[in-house]
View 1 (cartoon, rainbow, N blue to C red):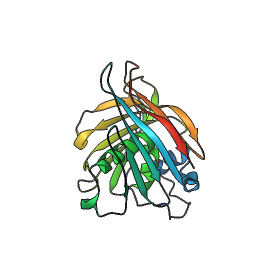
View 2 (view 1 turned 90 degrees about the vertical axis):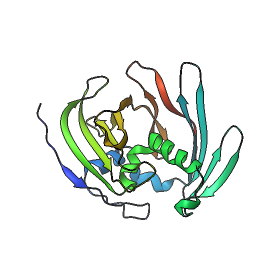
View 3 (view 1 turned 135 degrees about the vertical axis):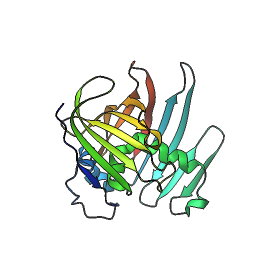
View 4 (view 1 turned 45 degrees about the vertical axis):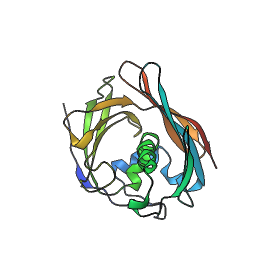
Length: 213
């Protein structure tokens, strides 16, 4: 198998940065889903759903005021709003859920927003579930960042830098779990993959009730 590897450090990019982004593969993935148009969004809301077994579904409802950096959580028994600018120790526990769910919804954009990760690229790699030829982008977060430091993601990309499948590897373990990235939908000026299935085609996590301004 012909593979080429590239190891670099990602740099911080925020909404306020210049739209001219580095010509690296992580940013190419972000661009493929419309990162350059993201600042046109004022807010976005969605429901994150997980199929825990053949019957039970657990859902969380989020509304993200992007401009004012405010998050609203709505669950079965409670609803509240908090600022993302609070000190980390003052953020509600629900923020962990918001961050987790946002990765399932917006991982391509996280590649542009996040700092503190390294990445590696391998060409002509078959995807784990469906054996499609792909470019494998491995992202490993540093041991001091985020709620789950040290985690790794293997993103399997098509020729247009879209994600076909991804593997999550907790604490950069050798093995992980893999799901598809499919059902890409237009959400105003950006695009989001709204369905993640396992190798048997069973839905695991999906995004619904998307609204935006």
